[in-house]
Length: 210
Length: 274
Image (cartoon, rainbow over all chains, first blue to last red; front, side, top):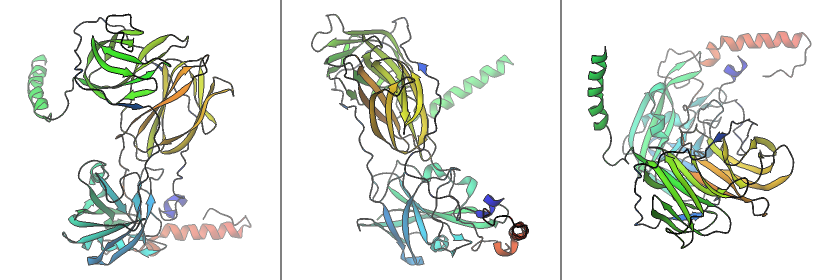
C-alpha cells in the first residue's frame, strides 16, 4: 500500500549506471560440432574479401544528450535529463513534471536513424501540472527545437499528434532504433483512474527533422 | 479430420509465402562470423573447398557472413599451404542451421591442440535497459570461473563451452580465475556492455604458453522497448472532469494518516516508511 501511494514521483532513485549482476549458476552447453554426413555441401562464394577486425571491445559511444526542448506554439520550454528504465520495465521519468526525460538507450539528436524519445509526467501530486499538459494541443506542422549539451539546436516539424489507450501504444515503434530519424514526445492524458493513479492514455507527438 | 488438416496446410502455405518480403534474406541462410583464436598462426580458411578467408590473423574476427544453411567441411591451412596440403585444423560436417546466427571459432582444445567449434549466438530480444554477456572458453586451460565485479558469476566453465546472462547495461569488471580458486589467469578487464547488445567474450590462447587473451564479439540490435510510459500520477489534467482530485479521493491516504497517528501515539519510533 505504501508503494501504491508513493506513486512514481516519490519512487526509488534512478537506476545506477553501474550494472548490477547477481551471481547465477549457469548451465553450460556443449557446442562442439555435431558429426554429420558430408552430403549436399553448399558452395561458398569467395569473390569478395571478407571484412574482419581485431576482436577487441570498443568503448560504447556516448552521444551528446539533449538538454532542452521548446515547442513555442504551446509554450513548452523544458529542461531534459537522461533517463533509463525502472525495475518494473516502465520508462523512467523525472519526478518533477517540469523536467523531461530523454531515453538514453535510444539515439540523441540529431539522430542518424531511429527514434529519439523525450517523455515526462503530465502532473504530480507533489509538483502539480507540468509543461507537457500542453502536448495534446500541439498541432501538426508545429516547430520543435531540441538543444544538445553542446548547444547545438536541432529543428523538427510535428507530423502526428495522438492520444492512444496505453495498452494499444505501439511502444516498439516509438522506441525503434531503426528507420528514418524522428523525435517522439510522450506524456499521459485521457481519463484518470483513482485506483491505479494512472491515466488511461499516452499523448504522443511525433516530429521529423525540418 | 486428416482431410481438413491437409486443406488447412494447402491454404496456409501460399499465404505464408506471400507474406515474405522480397528483399528479405532467404530463410535458408545463416549468419556466420569466424574468429581466429589459435596463437601464432596466420591461416587461410576454406569451407567446402572454397577459400573464404585468406590471411586470417590470430585475434581477429570477420564481419558476419551470410552463408547458405547446411553442412560445412571447414579446413584451416597455415597461410599459403592450402588447399592441397595438410590442414592445420579440419572440422568435417559442421552444421550451420537455417536462420541461425553462429560463430565458428578456430581455437586450441584444453590439451592445446588446434580445433574448431561452432557456437550458436543467442540473438533473442533483450528487455529494455538490458545487455547480454556471454563467455566462451576456447583456451588451452583448465576449468575456470568468471567473476563479475568480484563475484563468481559463471562457474566451472570448461573448453569448449559457454555461459550467458542478461544483465543491466553498463560497465562491469570481469576477470577469469582457475575454477574454485582466487588465481587470476585473465583480467581484470572493464567491459562496457551496451544496452540492447550481446557482448561475447572469448578466452583464447594457452595457459602453458602464457599467451591467454580475451577476444570480444558484439551483436547489436537486440534492444527491446520499455513496457510503458507512466506519464502522470495526479489526475489534475484528466479528460473526465468528474474525476475526484487525489487529495479528496485519497481515502487511503486518510486511513494511512490515521494509522500513522495511532502508530506514533503508541510510542513507537516515528521513523516510519513514509
